[in-house]
Length: 116
View 1: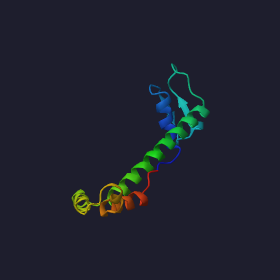
View 2: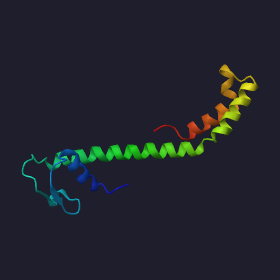
View 3: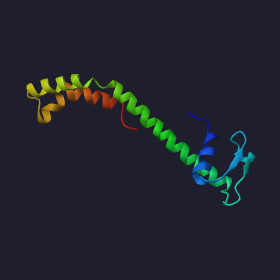
View 4: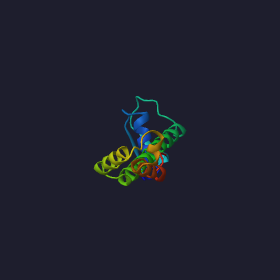
């Protein structure tokens, strides 16, 4: 995950997309505004936006990690369809379907990798 200070530049771009500025080492104390035609946001506003962007990025990363893990754990579609076919052929429909191989297999993946 990116250094938290990198989000300072992302926050500046989000808050003032047309502004020009220079910042050394991602440090707001070393920020020099080069645009005079904008209202410069305070450091508190910039830090709040940076925190919001970091939270959004962390959430997106967690969602992607969850999706990758779950997708790798599922059997191939052809195998899933074969399991489903055999469950239907064995009469495992309705409530009995919850005891079929397909349902049990898919449920085990969903249990192992719950949605965040």
